Amino acid sequence: MLIRVQGVIIRSMEYGEGGKIVTLLTESQGKTGVLIRGASKPRSRYGSLALPFTYGEFVYYKGSGLGTLSSGEIIRPHRKLRENIELAAYASYAAELTDRALQDEEAGSRIFGQLLACFGALEDGKDPQVTTHVYELKILQATGYAPVLDRCVSCGRTDGLDALAPALGGAVCQACRPDGRLVLRLGDKAMKLMRLLAAVDLRRLGEVNVGPETKAAVRRGVRALVDEHLPHRLKSRAFLESLEALGGLPVPDKPPAPEHGADGRTEGRPRFPGS
Ligand SMILES: [Zn+2]
Image (cartoon, rainbow, N blue to C red):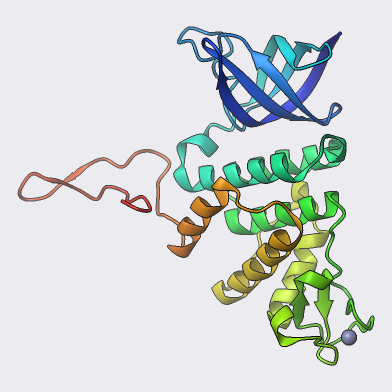
């Protein structure tokens, strides 16, 4: 059967002699694996089509197993997400989270639209941390773990919601803090922002002006929910967190022109975590 889909590459790995197997998140076929023969060879027509984060149209034969690419075309390459190390860290995390958290049948057209919007927002220069938190919340919703944020999960009150109980799946009011160890006191502002981010459609994400403390609190909350409900130990997560701990890297779009010190040595090179 010949299938024609629009899809985004969320994983790409070498296969056999010069081939690649890509995992696509598609609009109509959920999550699907496609073999692209010769994609790693220098003169392949489909070398760029097979790169991570590429949004394209893929036409492939599908029998009982893996699909095999027949033809394809790039719609939006998302090149910047591969070239800028900070954006690459966020995009890799979003892609790996999608791949690991979603079963094939959960990967519907809605989450496809949100991932595409996430990559678009990252490339268009929206706040990468806020963008990624919105996407994490969309994945929680798609997998049935949408946090309850507009009322206390314990008593249903809608005021005084300044803390989050990840294991209980949402906000708790000041009166019903079950056990201090289970509760993150994130504060009113962060809880309000989380409510806003959970409700927003990534395709309509505007500028979010938020102070560093609130942002840090939202990060604690969202990551605690992700850790509670979704697969652990994503490779991309450890790297992203090392970047976040540094407050992001000031990596420009183009490689910086080397600056030469008085002694002729090159200075001003970007520093990578662990270097
Ligand atoms: Zn309560």
